[in-house]
Amino acid sequence: MNKIFLVALLTLLGYSLRAQPRIESHITGWFLVNSYHGSVASNLVNVPIHIDWNDVNTKMQKWSVTFRVTNPIVNSEGKIFPADRLRFRLNTVNGNMPNDSGLYPTIAHLNPFTQEIPFQFTNSFLVNQSPYSLEVKKRYFVMNLQYDVTSAPGAYLEPLVSWQNYRVNIVMELWNAENQRVSMKTLGFDMGVRPGDSPPLPVQNSLIIDGVAKNVLLEFKTPADYANGVSKTLSRALSVTATSGYSITVHSVHQNLTSSSNRLLPVNLIRLTSKDHTSQATTGTIQLSAASQPVASSNIPALTPKFYDLTYSTKAGEESFFNHSYEQYSGTLIFSLIPL
Image 1 (tube, rainbow, N blue to C red):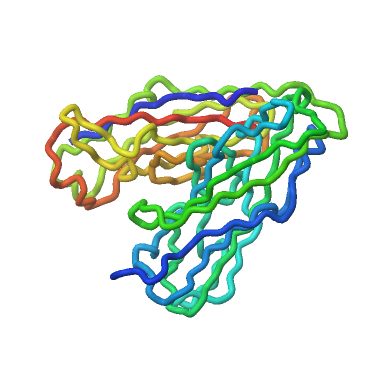
Image 2: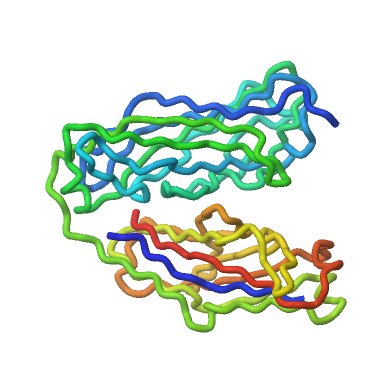
């Protein structure tokens, strides 16, 4: 089943380093896709982050980790495995000591994404603007994020069965609070596709964006708007039908919103919150970015349409808006539905 893309337009008016933190990666084995119903390689990818000295840039008080697939996943027979049918799932987080605030690195303290994150050729966040400070004035600090790799179930595997392994190559990148890359590491692992069971019926999925949600207007009109921020809520903005579990991701085509006079505003000044329309439970809150981020996911099929509300908003008192002339800034978002 191919990934479904939908487009929404977003419009907005109106100390020196001795040693940088570094990201590493370790592969614990290989991945065997042995079932049409989905396969798991537990703790296949380890992502340590090291701090070797005591003069860490304060920008690392908020940091992010992204990954992307660097090239098509192929084997020697020329068969191509669809990257988005693989995904990362966070297993554990641990470290050798607490940071200077006395906190050990844990899932609760790091606030990473814990839902399954599909592989893509564009950057996707594993951690986005973590509140866990890496300003650690110790001789040596390391924490390790351990990830399972899973494969999506489905009959798509049938023509990909082969005794020749596929090669998966990935780039991991560590970013500071100002979206500057601090460290990068490449990694790769082999994958076999040899299911031992029978293929299921093909999965059918659809993602529909409501007409009024295709063009979103956020407008600063009064001093109160600049002081309090502005927001726009769109009821039943997304509709999902799926005969399997699914994930909904979103990314901006560009890092900035652009005006007709070519002035720029960073797209990450806009926050997007998704809610289950029926229960009103929040399914995701992100700052918009050119990297794909999940805003909703479910392991339960949606055999009848399931609706999500979307809220676009800005932070109260955000100074980035104060010194810009009153004109229209626009950008484009891509929503993707990915079967689990």
